[in-house]
Structures are given as structure tokens and as C-alpha cells.
Length: 277
Image (cartoon, rainbow, N blue to C red; front, side):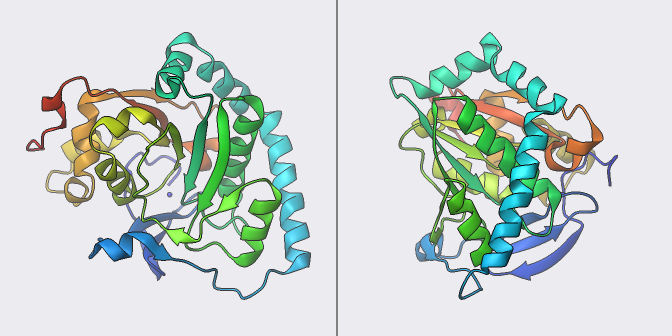
């Protein structure tokens, strides 16, 4: 997940656990899901490949993430994003999702390798800062099948919970939920939308790849595999309110380019019916 490229698609693949890790030309790792073959595989127990965490690595990674948090907090990118969240249009969209609830849980899928790459650390830093800033953001749960025991320990030290089950992105939003998924692969978004297709979509906020960019990709490359892996993404465009994220500087391009806030407001049952795309 080249600096000038705006096409959301795979470049190089490496198989790891249940997901295909996609190594970008620039930035963090992106990943693609294998197709789900049975309901049992949707809730598959997961354990880190390491047996135990390394205390020295835990301490070193904690320091690096704290530095990343400080960098993010003092950046123009972060100030611009806070201004965007607090505009009436975006803030009201959050409140519409909250309804009568006091907060919304944050679920982070596909954060990537925190030890090896800077963009995942910046993405995690933003999530942590948003929770500290806004009282209506609740607990944070994190999952990525490539997480090590050391990374899991660091996430817990930062106040996050690491899931012990690979949900394959199929979490049902039975309560207001912010899904934080910058630069995940199309099939992971598609799984999430499919699992919530109906009234539960209104209880979701998604921070992730621009759905408009998927649409443009399909228009430019007809017959693309994106049509099959992103069918629910393309269908959801009819009732998605999208607010693009401004990366502001090159320091934040790799972690956040082509990212958006996405809110779902299907008003008619007909909007949820499958259509040819």
C-alpha cells in the first residue's frame, strides 16, 4: 500500500496465515483475504507465531510508538484532521451513528507490522490520539494476523485489546462502532459490509480507503478483479457519505493517502438490493 499512484490494488504478494500480505512500493503493508470457505473459518482462533514476547523489544517499540504519537500530535496533518472531524457536517454524522449511546467502540483491522514499518505506527498513533481527544470514542480492539507477541504486548500496554479470534473482517455492528482500517484490501472491506448489509450499516463509521477510488478503478480497468472482491463496496456508494482525508505533507502520505471517513445512510430498502455493477 508508487508515491504518485492512486490505484488501489496489489503489487507483490506473500502468503501469511489466512491473509495475503501485500507489500506496497511505499508505505505500510497491505493485505488481502482468502475467500471464506465455511462459517467456522469466520471465527478462527488466532495466536501469535512467537511463544513469548521479548522485554527488550517491547520497551524499544513502546518508545518508538510514543515518539510517533508525539510527532503526530504536533503535526499539521493531525490539526487538519481534528478540524475536519469538528466541522458540523462530519461531527453530526458521528452523532447520528452514536444515537442514544455515549460512545462507539473502535475496531482496528490490519494495522500491519509495528516493529518494521513507520506508517503502521503513525496509523496507530492517530487512533490512540483520537481516543484521548474525543470522549465518545470507546475501547480499542486490534487485530492483524501478522502481529507478534511483542507487538501484542505493546498494544496492551497502550490500552488496546488484541483479539484472539480472526474475524475475517466480519464483525457485526450491533452497537455504534468505528472500524479503523486504513489501507486494508478490498475484500476485507467487502466482508465487513456484507456482514452488516442492512440496518446495522447505520451503526458503522469506517476510516479506510476511498470508495470513490474503487469506483474510478473499475471505470478505468473494466473487468478488473476489484469488481468481484469489492461488490458490496461498489453497491454501497449509493448511500455512502464520504469525507476525504488530507495528507497535508509527504510524511503522512504513505499512511493515509486516498483515505476517507465513510458513513452509511441507506434510506430505502431498494438501495440494499443487489444490482449489476
